[in-house]
Structure formats: structure tokens, C-alpha cells
Image 1 (cartoon, rainbow, N blue to C red):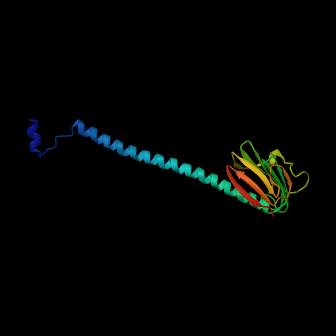
Image 2: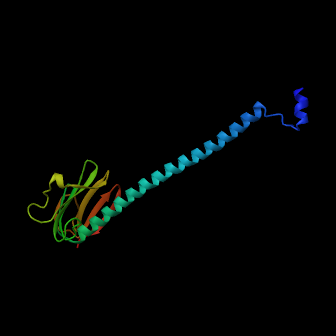
Image 3: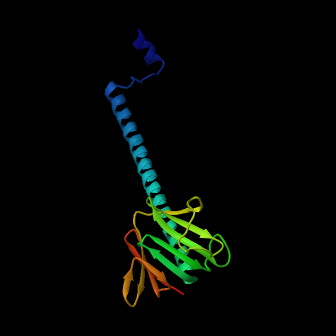
Amino acid sequence: MERKLSQRAGNTFKGFTLVEVLITLAIISLVFSLILISFQRATFFTFGAKKEAERLKSEALLFWELQRSLAGAKKLKINQGKELFLITSGGSLYRGVVKKGFIHKDGWLYLYEFPYPSGSIDFYEEEKLVKLAKLDDFKVFALDSLGKHENYEGLPPFVIVELNSKEFTFKVR
């Protein structure tokens, strides 16, 4: 009876089998999983590129800060290859001649700047330290006709700075 009614109405549709429905769902789930995986990888690589760009930016700013400070240096002191103190005209926080220090401790490179070059050149106040960059390795050497020095006071012709296995040589004055 039902068959005759459906034939009269012109209905020739019999429906989907379970296998067809399962195959369709599997194809749709594969497409969505591919889209999700590609989005996840793109996000991961973008985050990695952003982190690398920030690291390179901080290294470039540090390089520029060191170059400016050493180009205007009037007096320089290096302690154990980990601290660099200067009397320089290349201040970044204050104008004019300043007392400046680059101190590496706890995996961070700190900047200390004081507007008046008075007192001991290697004195700094802990609460006035400014974080410059996170560096695993920071070493400073004075280079003169006698070689490289970890401890130095005066004005050498060159200063060598090692940042995370990269070596930079700066001409002083």
C-alpha cells in the first residue's frame, strides 16, 4: 500500500545507507582535522617567529646602546668581564655626561645610569637598575696592545663584547 502511494506521488528516493552516511562523516571529519592542524601549525610558527623577532630587536637595541655609550666614553672600567662602567656623553636616560653601567647578573643584563659622573665609577644603586635584555652569556673585554683584559680601568682602543656566543668589537672614541 505504501509502495503504491509513493509511486503515485512520484517519489523515487529510497534514502541513504549506513555505509554512505559513515563515509560522508569520515570525509567531513578529515577535512576539518586538516584545517585545524594547518591553523595550529601556522599559529605555532607565527608565535616562534614573533619570539625570535623580539629577541633580535632587543639584541639590536643593546648593540646600539653599547655603541653609543662606548663612542662617547671618557673613562671606562671593566670588572671580571661581567660589568662595564663608563663615564660617557652617550646617555640614554639623561642628557650630557653621565655615569653608566652595564651589569650582568641572574641571566639578565641591567643598565644603570646616573646623571652626574661623581663618586666611584663602579658604584650603582640596585633599585635604579633597568632590565635591558635576557642574556645567557655576557662578557666584556678591553683590547689593547697587550691583549684582552677582563679587568681594566682607563680608555682602551677597543672593547670586545660577547653576547650569547656572538662577538662584537667596538672602537672607543
